[in-house]
Image 1 (cartoon, rainbow, N blue to C red):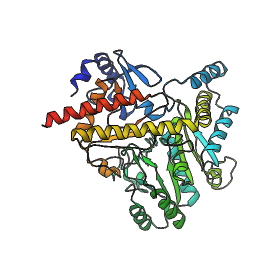
Image 2 (tube, helix red, strand yellow):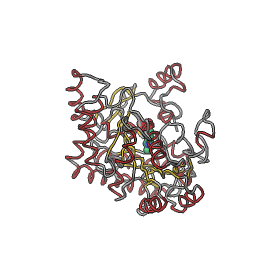
Image 3 (cartoon, helix red, strand yellow):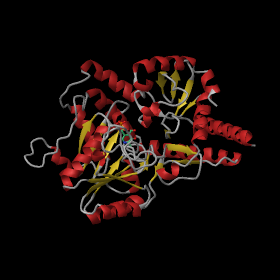
Image 4 (cartoon, rainbow, N blue to C red):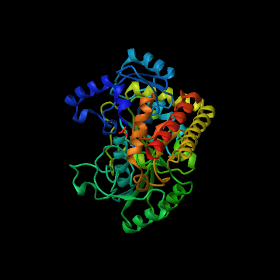
Amino acid sequence: MSRGYEDRTGASKKLFERAKRVFAGGVNHNARFYEPYPISVSRARGQHIWDEDGNRYTDYWMGHMALILGHSPKVVVDALRSQLPNGTHYGLGSRLSVELGEEIQKTVPCAEKLRFCNTGAEATMYLVRLARAFTGRRVIIKMAGGWHGYNTELNKGVHKPFDRAESAGIPEEEQAYVKNVRFNDLESAEAEVRRSRGDVAAIFLEPVLGAGGCIPADKDYLKGLRELADKEGVLLAFDEIITGFRVSLGGAQELYGVTPDLATFGKIAGGGLPLGLVCGRNEILSLADPTRKEKFVSIGGGTFSENPLTMVAGLATVRYLREHAGTVYPKLGRMGEEVRAGIDREFAGSGVEAHTTGLGSLFLTHFGADPSNAEEAAREDKKTKHDYALRLMASGIFLLPGHPGGVSTNHTSEDIDYLIAQSRKFGESVKESVG
Ligand SMILES: Cc1ncc(COP(=O)(O)O)c(C=O)c1O
């Protein structure tokens, strides 16, 4: 299946050989490696990326789903251009960071106060520290399949068998107080709260399980978790690094009508530049006030936090989204629905068992039963999924194999029709090879 892909990506292949001599495994993020070798991007604009061989792709990976306005949107490019001569890094606060912070405060229901950093992995690490200090408890309940970045404690049970460290070099003790439960299964969370009674600091989850299968929380699941947390004096925390500013302006917490005590954001909020942030109730975030004498929680920031380039890119993006929310979100939701329904219709027509999950503009096709948690998603036919991604790439569509995709405001109905048509062709080829 990789022949069509390899025939047109010789320059990427060569560059990857060089990359392997420089970087461990040739990549700087594990998700970016796929067989036989990944494409190398030479430029990006709107809904498109181009590779080293000059092939153009309609991009649905969109920079790990960070680019809701597409690549290099004018509002962000203009903001960056006007900031560049005025400093790329202050190492101090500025009006720009206050303004982006205020935008987020205004938009995100739980964000009474927040702290910027540079990546999602940092933000989730800080969230854990804040939750433990506030409650005086140790256990963090997360979801099997839940991905919260590369930080040591939370890097547990993301993949099968969903109960151990994802990496060598992490002693068991480091993750002893992180427990995985089944997503969309309230009883599984209740059972862990019972087992760890009196020591649970927070239940921490992505409202749409991302790397675990692009699976949205059932309508009442988040409400059930909120009630459970309130009953047990446990904090409820959402990782909105994918869903924030994507499934609705105020994130999944606004869409589902469930306000968590703490949350992390990143991706879209940085407008395509590096950003992470932790936000939540004032009394929790206030523990990070460096003038505190007692119970002070030391969290970053870091050297490059609130750097003015990220601040202006984030501001331009979040303001644009707020000002155009009435058109952007309904349009993205409609297009996402068309993608999910169209792909499923074509595979059903070819007799291929496939289900496309997602919410709003997010989607991921599973070759197997319709999953409601990561364990079920892991049972699918991975080879067909990989073949599908390579076939799409060979026809000028980029979806990172095995990962969710996201529609941006730049995608057109022609783009979506083409994705659906190529899915039909793939379905027909699978049927022929089986038949
Ligand atoms: C839900 C979620 N949390 C955390 C992270 C980590 O963010 P970063 O890659 O910026 O460290 C990601 C990244 O993909 C994510 O999807």
